[in-house]
Amino acid sequence: MQLGAEHPGDRARIVLVEYYLTAERAVVLGCTADAAEPDLVTVPLPRQEIRELAALVRTALRDNRPGVEALLADARLAALVAPVLRWSSPGDVVYLVPHDVLHVLPLHAVPVDGERLADRNPLAFTPTASALRYGRRRRSPRADTAVIVTDPPTRRRPLVFAREQAKAVGSGFRHAEILSGEAASRARLLTLLGQGRKRAPEVVHFAAHGVFDADKPMRSGIELADGRLTAEDLLRLSLDVDLVTLAACETGLSDRRPGDELIGLTRALLYAGARSALVALWPVDELSTSLLLRTFYTQLESGASKAESLRVAQRRLREQTIADAVGHVRAARSRVGDDPVTDAALLREEARLLFRAHDHEGAERLLTTALAARRHTAGVAAELRVALTQIRLAAHDAVPGWNAPAFASPYHWAPFVLVGDWY
Image (cartoon, rainbow, N blue to C red):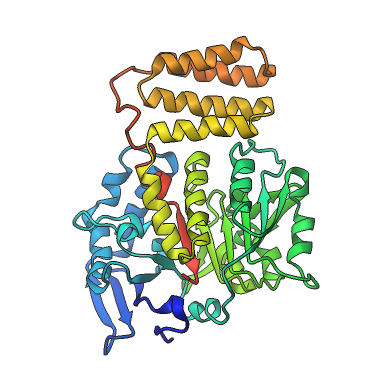
């Protein structure tokens, strides 16, 4: 595979890093276009030990536990990432080819001597090094057409920031078709992406619930109004699209088969022809996801690469304060809080942020006022009363105030990874 430049966007130096785990050790291979030969580093870490550590990290990330940063700072994980920092310079594009359980670990969030890949380098993942040739075969101008699928009705909880997210994403494209509610259907989407279409969208964005089916990975997919869009569905398509964004839970997970063959949604997208996919490795928080993707698309619109856009979006999300987050929620209430369920969800989110800012009285007053207005159904009012009781019973210890970071935890900023073409 050639790592040299193919067009102006490829002038950055690219570092390809491939991992392989054995029963006794981890092997890390580094390759660049300007090196005479690849470099090889052996880390004396048994595969089972890495799997056990990965299980602890993933549990902490799924539950947003306070100790997740300490787990990611484990010296064993740092040893796996340290060669990458040695082989690359700040600003180099780093391609990671994980193996085994490393596919589901956020290696970009592992600090090495206080430095993380996510801060230092534009980063992309690929299931195999050979898969890179497919994403880089053809180039299109910067995307100006998009299909955006948002908040289809399902049995699961509504996505309160999805409609606002759709509007924000759509505003950055010259031609954007938004499929919302009942219109966000599997049938409609397959028609838009299927054969015979006049023009394929360059970006497909999903703000919907994702499902990973561990028993039948090819049944993993996105829940839509009339059923699930599965990995099997995607493999039947020819997707001439530049980017598929899956702003949904665990869309980046795949089942591993002997030989480390991955079966799941991400692999299906790449095989179907998508040049890249932005996917999540664990269940995501709606508010922080909305803020991260706003910045991501703004950066894309300015001409930045996908990998650099994600790097900037992750950094800026960590800089968001509780005051910034409260302002975003209040603005969302004024724009999309036009039904009781959405309004109540946004009220709970604002109250939670007020409590984190040590404004306990403000949090109680917000929920008490909402309940007194009697606007909500009995079920929704019950949820608000539960939130109010939780705030009243919680320990009112001193906590950082309004200017404290709202999303500093890797749980918020690190779930999304770019798979495929970095540019």
